[in-house]
Image (cartoon, rainbow, N blue to C red; front, side, top):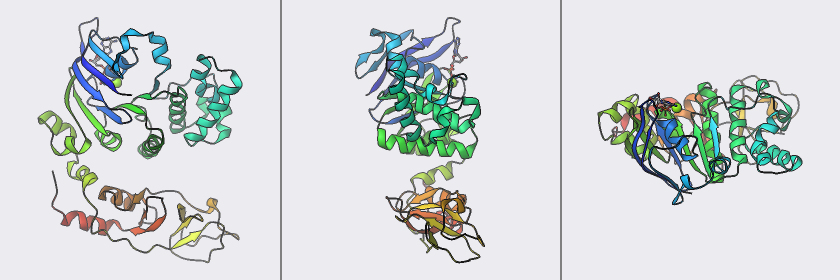
Length: 361
Ligand SMILES: Nc1ncnc2c1ncn2[C@@H]1O[C@H](COP(=O)(O)OP(=O)(O)O)[C@@H](O)[C@H]1O
Ligand SMILES: [Mg+2]
């Protein structure tokens, strides 16, 4: 579904102009990120899509149809919405939280719970969490449940307002990866709000930079916005660590993929004083086996420590550096498109390649 803002303005009753003549088209099946400093009108813009806020000027169109024309309650039920702190109902179990919209839509309880259980799996949480209450989950788990609840609406549109801002950076990265993974399967039209430019360029197919006063400063691909900021405001907003961010688009030619020692789950392992990578029968990484580990009989997943992002060979060099820097073994894991291990990369060598490349900016 495409979402189109046409000259959309919101002036609150106290006179504040939160959004000023916004023109923006969100393309079908993409993630568009609204990013900008606090108070620039991101939340207001997002909420005008599902009519939690009514514009005072202009129109919001969903697939060409003005959202103002239908029943707002129906519209809202048909659009997934995720907010910071998940906004879960504290006195309902996780499953019942996820089942909220199907129940509102008249599904019977058994069918709604079955759907909720499927979604729990989709977002990567164990089934036994379904019976718990939100307060019994970690912050990251609660956000996942919030995402599952929004997916339960089974709508082509998902609105996300700073959904990951309240969790720590490591969990945030997991959640971002999970969202990208889900999106590669679901192909929804997602509008994602954040004040964090790193998150914006990581997730967005397109990034809309907003400035206080509710004006759109720039709209483009992450590469456009980082490399060719239209003015000083955008330049300073995206400017921090700009060289490093440019890496997202830099080719990784010259990075050496080194051999990596593998151990297979289910097979016996000998003693070793180095880190080894545990893989499944398809040669996909499952975690690291620390030096001098003792394994009883066959290697199991429980023997492995998780950690480290994977770098898909052929993708930009930033992923290689992230993988190398985040690996407990100081060796970043390189995989092919099917996530099969190809080898490892060392941070120092990746940095050497980066330093030898003329910086695009
Ligand atoms: N209900 C409201 N009444 C009056 N002013 C509001 C209301 N909601 C938001 N605002 C103001 O509108 C501007 C944009 O707010 P908001 O959309 O929440 O921005 P953001 O999500 O980018 O932080 C801010 O100046 C904010 O104070
Ligand atoms: Mg906001």
